[in-house]
Length: 92
Image 1 (cartoon, rainbow, N blue to C red):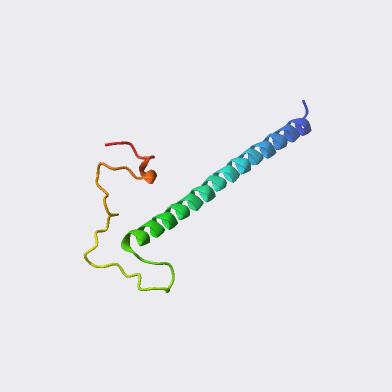
Image 2 (cartoon, rainbow, N blue to C red):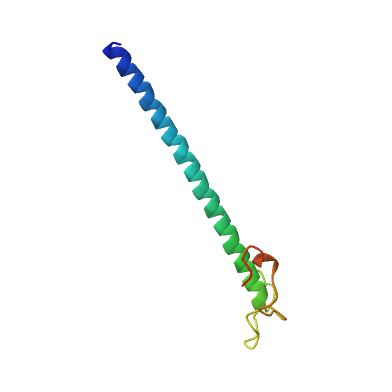
């Protein structure tokens, strides 16, 4: 084979390798974006649940301040009980 043929073949292989790297980076960035989105949802959900447990209301439409004597856990919650969002965690 001539030098030009080998050079052209190597250039095509290099282009293929670069495209493979770009596709891999694309899926990595999609994974990062999805993870960030899920973390934001989880944080938002925890904030809503925490506000509900403390007795806060959304906005400025009422007193909504929790009493200092209230427990931080929901009423009637014990360690033996499971919440729906605990299903992903293994039992102790």
